[in-house]
Length: 423
Length: 196
Image 1: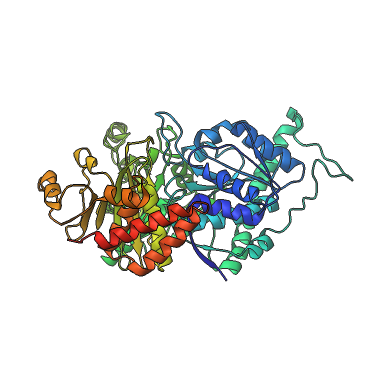
Image 2: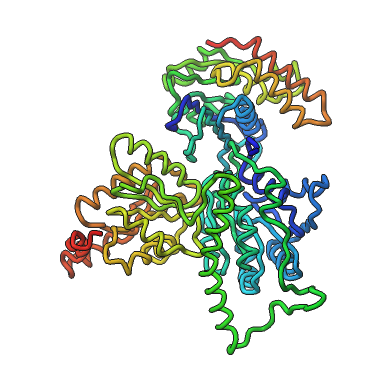
């Protein structure tokens, strides 16, 4: 029987860790993830788990601890945020390239400066190329569910997994949650029995050797292959989890997309607020939809492109700035996934919610309004935009005008031929 | 406002150290125990004792998807009346709801101080007096929690009293005097506090 409870996202992750009972947890506190090792250390002190809890002196050491433990054949996990994740940087790459299945909860928070402790995705987005699987969560329920699945995904793929949740918004917000009984969770994650590990008596293994040029690139190629091969595993684990709980987990969730004209692509807690906007606009007869991306690494290029193609225009939302002068990280990848398709929707980008800037239902109305204007004018305008900012929303307006001057009508090329390509 | 049945939204204003966040989480817990779907979340900033803080509750019969702050609350609870000078506590507050405020002053005096900014009900609680009488120390959050429950009717009073006793026992397992004191503070507030 599922257990009706109420917990903050942090308490839910610590509770999942208690149920999993890992061999080693190495952690260092940093807001807003601090509560996870704090609550978990209480389970350790109370004898509810027999984990080796190592209170290290920095995040660099926290990840080193997990790497050492995981290489030795132990199930290891940790949690961090913001500058803590940044301080783990070099170790993230080591963990991934050594194929060590560590599970880490990243409680998303901005990176300074200016100094800020609130939520955005700049910490985990910065770590997107480190070779870790990245899964984002909308609610406390999802971060709990994702964390349990993350352990299994990591161990089956031998790729470390980051389970991300929005700092303060879900990490410190208490709300209803359906917990899974201990024996079911233990059964779901099973015992960790790696085939090969550093301290295997019969066949000891070297971990983390120097990769000279004749070998380094092949190792990277294998990592890339493993990332691709993790995709069916993520779906399998989601299906098994669905059989246990009835809750569905895939690469992304499509909300009211079947007959939608326009849609928003978004990750994390803001997806809930966006769904509320969809509900209310649907009640007014507007055919709007939302895609909530759950798995950012590996990037589900083809299925996401297919889902976005259902509509005439999409707004892709980034809670991180990448200073590329062409949009945020999710936008770059989602938009690029459309390139090979004969018909593509207009795709615009919104940078939003940086450093804890609140996003309201009304903000989503504005975005849907913009999308309808784009459809009407058959012109995306400037694709790189800011939401909820006091300064101008457009970064490239001037550039666009110069471009228009030299290539009159060029921005409308897609629009003209779109009918012909309609699927 | 969230598009679900019987949604009630609260905004708490307090100062760091007064327990507004704790009261907000207790309200979420009590409403959860009565079968509701709840959200209880603080708004974090640079934290220090005495700095203005805000916390929020959404309480409803079905799941609320919204994860933003609350801009149009049904009820505002002010744990420290000196905040009236610096924070626009009634901003967006529903005229059908109420302002619940910890103060020595009367509702009329508070209404004058608000200078026409709010025309709904104003409920005053002398939480300092209640707290000193029952706990011997100034912890305004427990009386304010009881007042919020009484004004808003989000939870049955009897059930609220039972639930809070459980919650306090859990929070102070080795301090039975604190459990008793807080329970007395709740009962006293529920008895003495007149809803306008």
